[in-house]
Length: 402
Image (cartoon, rainbow, N blue to C red; front, side, top):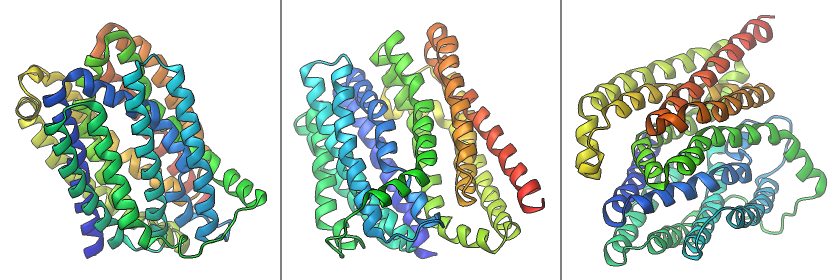
């Protein structure tokens, strides 16, 4: 229990670290730079998720393969280098200046090392070694805060602050994370084509689900940037960091309990759902507390943290409060679907949500701008949550009791 609490605390610190990055970029560099930073996240987000191939969920829960960690590690290495190649192609396709391309290259390298670290987390999640992951997040957060703040204050440029992220990530990876890798302790493990193919077939559905999930989030950002400018995207992204913090907390708690819930699912669906519904109830209490704080002090928090240029966004904060509810429960339902290995239906649900996100983005964002972007997010998450509930109820009715 202590390790799980520490992991949540480490994730909260890491989320606050990410929030501090946005605050410093907004205050010291400007809205244009924070808009670019958000644009880089939106461009690389789907590629990062596809390259990770959802091994963090697949390795602890998969039952069809009996591969050791070394095989999965080699698979991740291949997809990680493919991530760099795909990122270069995207960089050449978008309209950026040479300096902006340089910043994006540094950002891609940062994500490359983050992917390597994430697999070490995956191994330790599968072994229920949550304590290591918690300490790693804490150490990285402290180091990143120090280096990022120093870069923002001493050399306020986007290239320097992104470079500080890369340096922090590399230092933690080589000086701490690698020592806790299970696969790297057994060097020389190769992956054959058959093994690569088997992992690919098992995980492709869930991986596409995550890519579509990322695109559902990022398509409105692409449309907002194209029709209303990078500064408007910067405003949207800074407010939406409340959602990212919430999402990170939910993911951290899911990582702490997924192995245990998976074992309970093996024992019986009834055993699983008793624990799962308790988890949903706990989150409901946290949501109520968070909504009270957000709706009471949200406007004050915005202007205090980001400056007076963020005054007058009360309507957007209200919409954000609604969005956070769906953010929490779609992640919980997604974990439940993965534990029961219901991957194909997740792909169908995300395909429907992705289609809705594209249509709604053009219908709502072009005429309504910032407010429209929040409405798109709410409607798409509402569609996704409704579909997840229907699939889980169908699974319980026909697979468990059928």
